[in-house]
Image 1: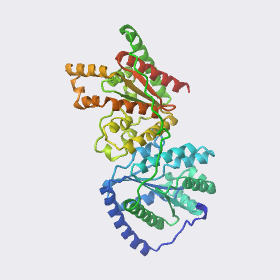
Image 2: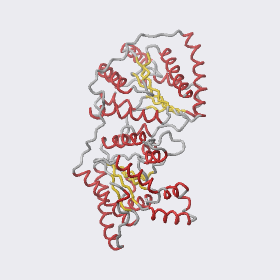
Image 3: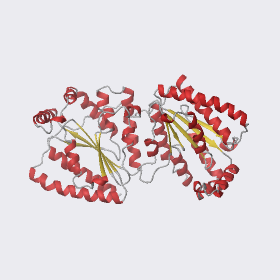
Image 4: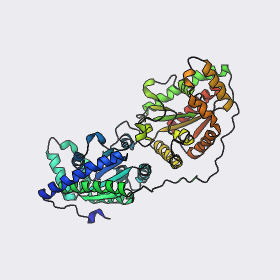
Length: 483
């Protein structure tokens, strides 16, 4: 497929348009109900060169749908967002709903490739993996490219520039694109060819005639939705290269200790140092995501409290993760974490995290084996993306012995202000200690990658664990600021 060889203009009479649109809108309205009834999340990406008519096309398409079950979002990154993928994470469609985007997640790769040959490759790979995540989780992805000619683009640019109310919609970059139209079209052609998958192929629509483009886009939606529900099943895999490896066990606990005197001496100094570093990160707009995982009663809450003692509360947020809500369950399982990501320069602390997918959800059977096996790579790729975007990713596993956990459970039951922390579920989880232990070892082995390695903290002594958490966090922050 070569864009320069494809037609950009097709004629259509007003009568033909009116007759066709009425029938198409009835079909789309029916299909939206089918999408909702079958709990299918739908992404509709409308892309194209400048002035191709993306917003107008979306404006026409949504008229056929119930506004309670769709949303329209921009794929443009906001100023303080930590990732170029954030707009797509935030507007992720829930099951049974539709999200329209005025550009595709391949646009960043397209822009980078134009800026410097070869620089878009990493962005393209991340976009592919993002799309795979959703295809594998049962989403329907519809991709439309509105194809216009150089002359049509030039004409539309002049019209917009001359209109005082619309002149803000174009800038020098749009005119630069028209001046170097062949270059931009070639880059768009490459973007399309590299991301044209059988499960989510591109629909190239001649868009010099806006009415025709709208009609053909509507027909694309009808066909894609109908095919998806009647005959298509996603068969795209992200395979783990570690699936046949022996899983090593993490080191046995050594019951490391620290005296009360040393603890009281080190703690405030480390806390003050962390305060200084967090301010420097804020000034340099470097964000951090710190994840705490560990056995029940391992001391996560106490470690988090000491970690943040002197940090400006305006620059951090602690996000405790409980069982997913009914809304969470209607989205990709990573969605509830994506939407919590911090702004540039801020810290986010997860008290439990997306690793629940390969721990409690795996052991308790809350997801299928295919789902938790796939999660290792999905999580690792997400963390790799965050690191590439400059986010500091720190992961702690607080390890304790089974006997120590029992002692702490019993103590909590005897302590009035702590008894609320113990639930029947905590006792049930103890009965599956060995299963959880195996899952922990596999989690650490498969998801400890460059830039996001696990810090296994000995937690039998809470004071020792708190000092280790502070020291490892300081080390990570200093390394980031020196880089």
